[in-house]
Length: 324
View 1 (cartoon, rainbow, N blue to C red):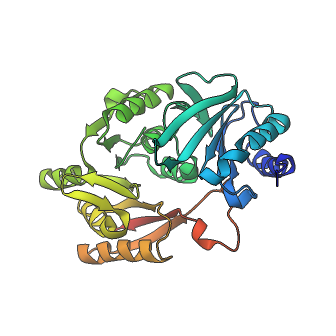
View 2 (tube, helix red, strand yellow):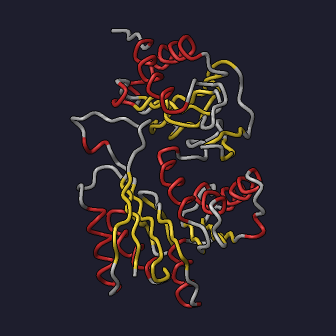
């Protein structure tokens, strides 16, 4: 049966308008999750709002035939500048397929979006991700509020959104660590967009585990550390996973965290037991011989609704610890 997505899109848009203002009118925040799959009654799809563009993520082959009708509804209800379609699933004959301009205005190679007034560069074409994970918006705001005067280490820094938040919040200096040179260069551009000199901060193209071990050997200490690893990563030691390796990662971070330092322990992996993340972090704290208090917890922001019947869909877990 052919689905009519218009009312579903209207309902989803009303929630986001209450949070961020009218779509496409350059509000203070113009990058957010516009449609969140099952949570908005649109299984198989997610839609990102990016400065008046809509990025449609097709999450399964079964959903692909309905993509044009969803895009029709987005055009009718929201009048976006343009729509980009990304296929976010494996196709046996071609693997993953990068984004393509589906209709309307073609976005520029580098598009600037804003998050609570802070500008970030995103790319809507040519890759699976735009360069800004909007599900971490609340944690970036929290880090910005708590960073003043601290030396901040942002591991798995990607395009530096956490790093910019820390620097904008008055961090003494920020170190961004990622193994990919291209994303670190974009991180530096994000610093410049906020009027912050990247030369006053540090960018390390290294494997995160290697950097943490190097910091421990050299006696470097940090007043706040962000751990936001991918579900899987490739290190020299082999394949790393959040399921098996998070306790070691947290232990290494604790070895270079100052007394009364803050640790952002983030997990964005689906399919793990509800308490898995907390147990891994608690094991690392116990092994360190230190004490810690939870000063904040976090999860998906309100533009990421999920079905009440599917608690496992709330994949994002964040513990902010103060460690003594």
